[in-house]
Length: 470
Ligand code: GLU
Image 1 (cartoon, protein in one colour):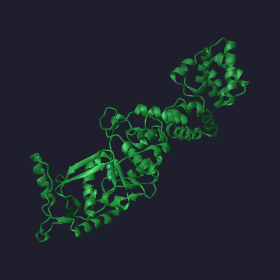
Image 2: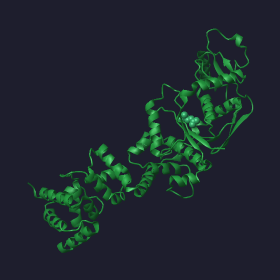
Image 3: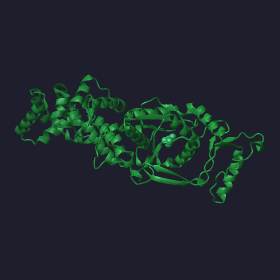
Image 4: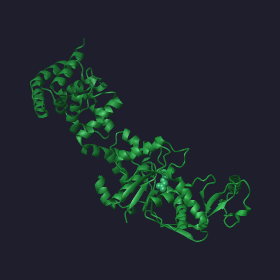
């Protein structure tokens, strides 16, 4: 049997990280077994579904790298098929026409609520002669559900879950206007897509029992189900805006690497021993949905950020440079020419040691693209006091004759400091301020080497002129 899983989001808003984790578990599960992973957009709610949300979902999955094996299925394009299956159930006597009006049922429901009773449709049209149908009412089609016994779901995460069939009434599968109901459509789609395993949020457990009724009526073997717990905020409450970012693309914009977010979400609720840093291939090898915890997991933004730092340090320098160049253009309005790109690339091994997000990385690299006069932060301005001028002029003379490799620069600066009777910091900090506009940067030798001799000497000269005043 080929394992086939699917991710089936409703395109009513941006893709939540809970959704990303669901997609990820489906992806890992199918890949583990050499199977297939599909995407179905559940867009039958025409009022709430938008093309923009669909695009956001696809962009999010692409960003995370969750490739699908077949073209995306749009549920709305399959409504005729859903309706045909509903009519086949009717023809087979597994479903029936119900002529209750919406008003009639709404009144009953309201009365039950008033009396604090649970209202269920009582199946009054189940065995009634359609000849008694009132005029002018377009009937809905309802499924004949089992009335006694219980339905047991052997869930791969939750274990056995039981529901008494008496708790489920005869649900509508086709509305009066011929449009299918959600729980019916899902069954038909999962069957037609040959889905073997449905992994989804545990908020869908009730739907599953409804869907099992449809499978039973159709005589179709249901897939296996795994209901995974939701992701909560650090305080254990439902994850919301006040906890921080929630949407996949927000994390992208905040400078998270997709593989870091993936690793974090994967480990949230599923673990393999103490392994914290786990690449995609290894996760595919180790993942089993039955190892997912039953309890809700808590989002820990600090842990995610630290893990992102680990991934940034491991990431390819060329890739990071590309991302930083793009962020500098989009977020800082700084357009890097070829020289500036080369500087960023040269300093990247040192820059990435200190950054936990790509936003921090771009911020730290910005000075490499800027032109003089550099914006100075307060600490840098303080370091460039009146005493700094002569020292900077002397160190510039020294650097003018130095080979511009980081080790040679380091040696030259140490020799200079010693001769001048200064501590290394007394030399490096004014230099750093002159070169970067800040008191924080990678090692001064690497910073100078990345800027190159001409640009370094130019920046120092501008700073000296500034210190000395007009
Ligand atoms: N469309 C549902 C949702 O977005 C998922 C349904 C399913 O996975 O079966 O929550």
